[in-house]
Length: 438
Image 1: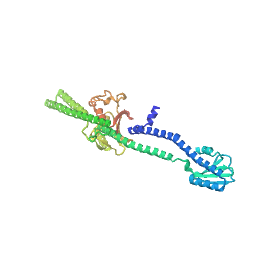
Image 2: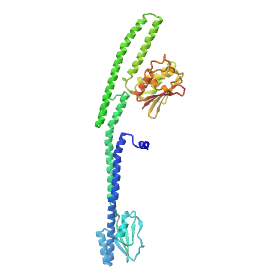
Image 3: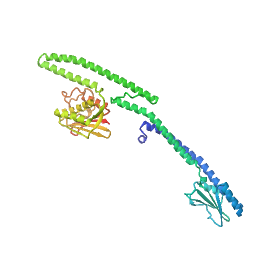
Image 4: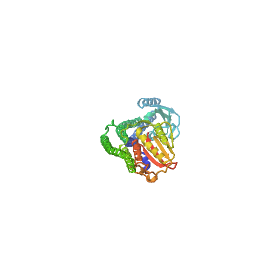
């Protein structure tokens, strides 16, 4: 039951806020309508029905008390001038001894009871649906008294007025509520877009706090957090640049000294160690530095991945590439190229055949890379993304780098708002699926 209620209720803040306003409004209108119809409408209808039935009763009394032609004429004038009714007497005609509506229907059920109470004689009611009048025929001792009156005498226009007022005021208040709530929700949406853009390392310089006090406080806190993170990244970059300069200088001196010592085996081993240290240093700096300074632009992913695949083929890799048409996406080209290149090179290193697929799935762009290599154990899918983690069995330590490749890949993918998933390839090796929101 709880799940059903959550599925029915709106999920957006605007929808829930409007529901908080609309539900009490609807309940108020329902209660008002119930009170109106139960109290006001019933009373008004009874008064109108009794009034018309009383006028008919007066005419019955006048005609019976003045049976002459002159008396009838006087009664007809009173009916026309005082009660706005047309009256006639049809001598010798007889009604059946029952109360009956012989044509159409009357607009108010109280009228039958009122006629019984005020007239007390057999009567028929003729009320054509398309006519503005109704006729009440009353059986007298010497004929039938026919009284024709306007139907609106049994109808109160306050019904339509009340309904129109209720609906009109509800729609007006609902429209005003929508406008105000949209204005209140808009700063929250802008804050969410700014936070998402900052998470993707996009420019959010134009964002400024606005809206209600609580929303401005949240926006101000976001800007302060953004500033602290940017200062931290800048400090880290400067520190790593200094570390890089400090370490490369002695390494360069050591390489020059070893180059002047000859070609002994021990010297060659030392040169290999220095080269490995340089390779490790480049990996550490690349992981820590990232691609934060690169701007996001609309990029032809189909052409970019084709270039990566062509480069891998020139190096001897067997790579099959398929793109579902031309696909463009807002990315940082160098970071994206580095990410996909890392995955393709890993696949060609450990597999004999590699398949690369690019396509669009609903609102996501997918890049799928399959190989037929040894793969990665399922229980270590998450471990391989940790910095400096290397597989001892399924990956060769000597050719597997320093354990930062997949860490850099996931960092690049997530800064673009996407994610990477590892699974078993249909070819038996590893499948890496990159998904980016459009």
